[in-house]
Amino acid sequence: MRPPILIVLHGELSTPGRVAVQLRNRDIPLDVRRPRFGDHLPKTLDEHSGAVIFGGPQSANDDDEIVKREIEWIGVALKERKPYLGICLGAQMLAKHLGARVYKHPDGHAEVGYYPVRPTAAGRAVCKDWPDHVYQWHREGFDLPHQATMLAEGDSFPVQAFSYGGTAYALQFHMDVTHATMCRWTTRGHERMTLPNAKPREMHFEGRLMHDPACRAWLSEFLDHWLKTPEPVKPAKGKTAKLAKPMIAAPKPARANGGGGQRRAISSVSTR
Image (cartoon, rainbow, N blue to C red; front, side, top):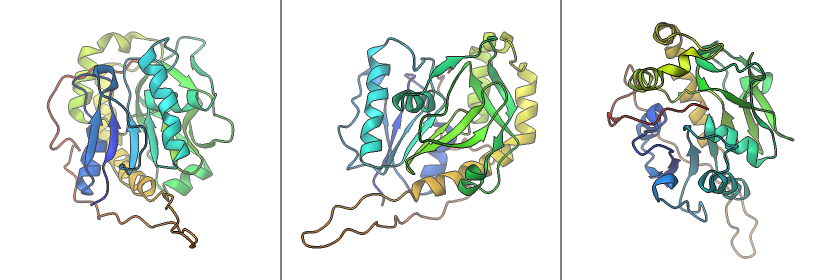
């Protein structure tokens, strides 16, 4: 069995949603940690296959020691060339770590609901088929870091996805969201749907009916690509190291709503 994926969450009861379902379908264990509630981040990822930092109500710009610590910690994954995935806040943290600006829209626009996304040629090389709309829940975006590769573009916030160094990926959008998560966010975070450019609640669920099958298929293809990221192998004495090819179990059939096996817990609502 592969070593676990480190999962970093920002709410006391938040869950990794469909990402957890997809990883467990591949028989990959999860090491879930919540630094805000006392969990420590490892000094090395030697015992992990990679790391995912999820969204949360914080901002990468916050003057908060835990936020600053997570942003700095991303350097561990980059230095060791372990697969890193940042989703929403986790993507903004990666951008911030790489020196890019994290900013609010000049007109106060938010992306809350389903919005168009346009993959670049580099994005098509990662995943051949992209959904034309993805689910968003944020009011901050980020610039493309130096030496990063744009994977997908949007309208209000142009940088929607990028890769860096062949091992790190940032997604502004939420492919991890399940139906249960959407119900919680649109109930507990209902005031976000009054922000400029935000979609009303009914359009979130209409959009899910239209776009979620493509989003679910995209996430499966993306994770297969992400998990195949080469990991460095320590060379034996007198021998030249070769990159090992990770063995990944074929995915098991996912449940229709992608939410099977999740705890039904109320999570903190990401607002960034």
